[in-house]
Amino acid sequence: MLATAVTQLPSEPGWAFEFKWDGVRALIDVSERGVTIHSRAGNEVGTAYPELTVLAREVGDALLDGEIVAFAEGLPSFERLQARMHVRSAAEARRLAAEAPVTFVAFDLLRRYGVDLSGRPYAERRATLERWAAERPDWTISPVFDDGAATAAAAREHGLEGVVAKRLDAPYRAGARSPDWRKLRFVRAGDFVVLGWEGVGSASGELSSLLLGYHAAGATLTYAGKVGSGLSSQVAARLQADLVPRAGCPLPQAPPRTAGRVVHWVEPSVVVEVQFAHWTGEGRLRHPVFRGVRKDKRPDEAVGDG
Image (cartoon, rainbow, N blue to C red):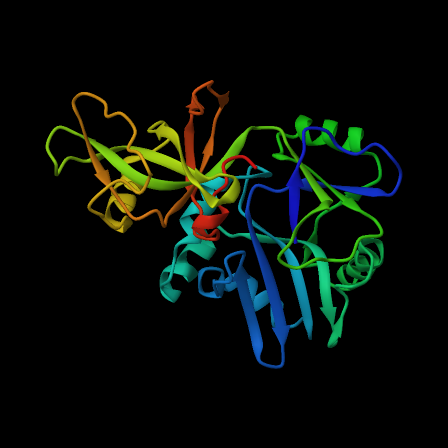
């Protein structure tokens, strides 16, 4: 279940409020078949997080929704989490788990002992989750509050990403983006698909910036501008290796080129998160900063800051 972006939290009764965690969404499924961890895109990512797999083995049958978070000095760090997200080697994952451990912050319980809870109201699911967590002190659940303004103030004070409001009587609608969940994000950011990259000088130059697009209404691929700030040399090299070249621009009309830059068009299959100040009148990102690759999201989910 996905939240709808808003600029103001609901103030009427009937809502609960949680902090928005700067991590990656995941479902932990524990059954007689073992433990699986799935990303939003439906990929099995348990290999990357062995400490969570070990923790979940003692749970018994359950399906938990939540966020995988890497903490640094007590605060979520998406940059720290990046080192964990793309690991496919079990040995490397075990090493990183010791150096940069992650926490699963649970916020919903969708199945318990084979009983599907998704059709029950959020308030009932939350109460069940709290009873479940009370018996498992090694697990972390997202705190919940009944005052939206106070929750937002606390989130800002502690440098958190934002607040999510959830309607108390709402069921869990898997795969749907519903107004029953609403997210207020303090820092403007969004998901964009990489259309190409620019290098300086020759055609074989190093990647210096990414050309970005997003799926507007009707799934139209629309140009959003470029981002170079925030791209470390290590991330740029990895992206340059992962992006799949194509003969021409994936947009209906190629954007103007910058003098002295060579554009390399790629298949629009890699999603990245970008922070920015606002949209310009021409529909370009103003002061964009690269935050990371989102392998947990599909290209059609790259809708800008929607």
